[in-house]
Length: 444
Figure 1: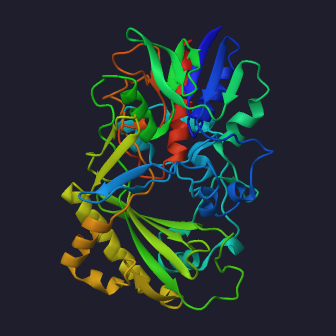
Figure 2 (figure 1 turned 90 degrees about the horizontal axis):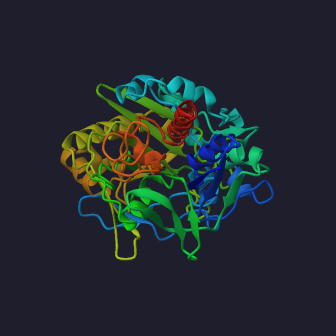
Figure 3 (figure 1 turned 45 degrees about the vertical axis):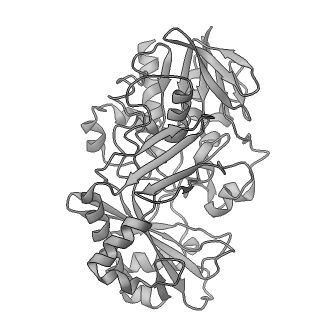
């Protein structure tokens, strides 16, 4: 029986565990360093509408993961999902597939078959779930719409629920939470297994890294993999948050608050050669009552200068180098100007008292000056928690996801995307994993 080890049980790893173990000639061991997720342990915070509450669940994110966003900025926490289900347990559930033509430009001409196989359900929230910023955005922009979410009957559906739970009884599938991989084990240039932090060694005929665009390159580097390009070309969607102080609470059921839907709408804006996304956050949790955010994100960044390196203990050091490309700075600035014009519309002025751009109380009025706007973005731009492309196909892996220069070692997660998609990354990564499995099935 062919022994497979899959490292990381997130958007990609859960897919691989299901599809690969469907062949009785394989034994699949799925490893993750975080907690388990079964129907018996899904909490209301994970299944519910408030992803901020999900992020607060013990063990569901990496508390010590830091990243620098723009030049000169200090590293700050970068929330990534942890445990069985990965980031699908804590994300905002936005379900977008992206433009097929962009995938075909990578040489991925077989994506339709992979999309057809995706098992993540998608539904729109009920109108009563929409918060005040959702409603104002939809009223203010013809390109705004209710967001499709990765839910069923109003409850989050994680990758674990969609792909793992139906096959947990397979004798040839071994799911191991709380199992941190210390390093890969090699026999020459062939990957022969993994060594866990507890010194357990697991032999394998094939190893696939699905640990994400931060932890996959970090593990490769810690294991001594010398393929050029590992940890380079890192990307994310640059973003700019406009904090909205809402007027006195409305009595309508659409009023947002803790336990209610944080994100229920979006606008995907065609801005010439760029795509800008407006994403509302109707509330910021109990610690920040009366506040919401309109996030402006550049979904088509050109810059790809980010890096993942490691410290002496093998922990990731992350620098996204967002906006190092002046074209990205100009495009995001244009998006912020569009957002300010949108916030001038009546639907927003009726619900928003003040728009802030920092914690010191500076208001968005300062951004009407172009020099001030660019200076603010250079120091205050954030990410979208969509890390990708740090082991890009054509650089680190070949067209079959295999690590160049090594045998029996593959990568299948956001790190292999040749370029960051113009949409939120959960569903594209799921599709990429389905594509990997189809190609493995066709080869065998």
